[in-house]
Image 1 (spheres, one colour):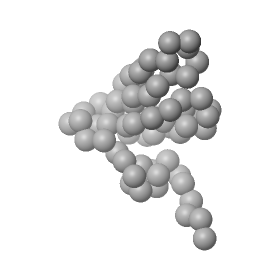
Image 2: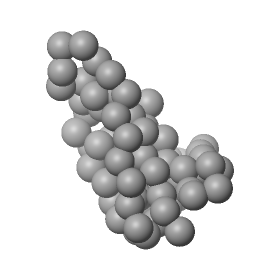
Image 3: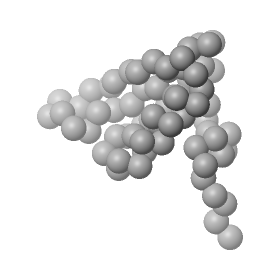
Image 4: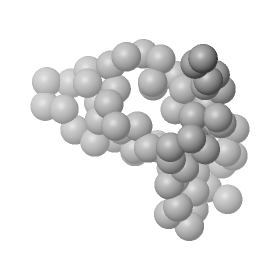
Length: 69
């Protein structure tokens, strides 16, 4: 299964949407985490080969978010 990450690239003058493809979910989620942690990239989304976006709580848990008390 192929996973796709789409995000806005905050590094260029003309901010554009970038897309990257990965062979495994683990690779895609690792890259998404890198993009989010950089604080530069916006609107990061991860989708599987069927076009289903991993979103909300499911994505947060997969990226290793911890609940706040």
